[in-house]
Length: 167
Image 1: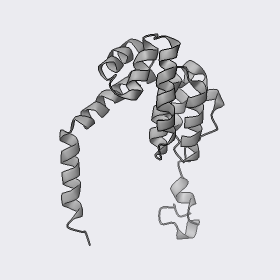
Image 2 (image 1 turned 90 degrees about the horizontal axis):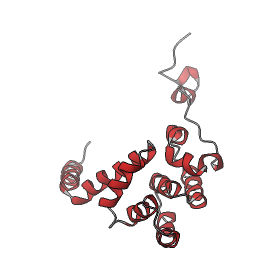
Image 3 (image 1 turned 90 degrees about the vertical axis):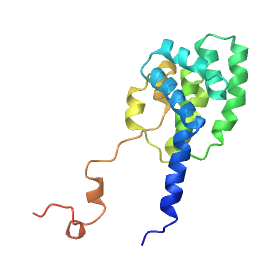
Image 4 (image 1 turned 60 degrees about the horizontal axis):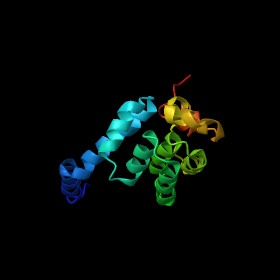
């Protein structure tokens, strides 16, 4: 039986999110990551400049615009402990990509290892992301494999799995 409270709360949350400035900032920030993943640094630089009031994009803006190393290091020192404390492994991984793009391999690898240990496995991204290639972080990460195509079918013995083909 569905709870009547769940539907209104879900609709309210979706509507609030849709109208909030934070959701558009998230979308704008996603463009920075997309441009960096595909190796388009000029568009990433342009997009990060629009968002440099946010700490992560301030760091990205500084490194993409070749700010003095002391400035980038200051941003990294401020941001790294915040991201390290994230409980969500996906959020750790996504932010680790920015550290990798800025040449902060040690921090990026530490965060990505933590994300993978937290059962976040972005298999395709690990293979194709230009941000990881730029600092060589990919070589330092543990193996992360996609589940086999028949993973759901291997959970139950054949005679108890309704999805298994009969012989």
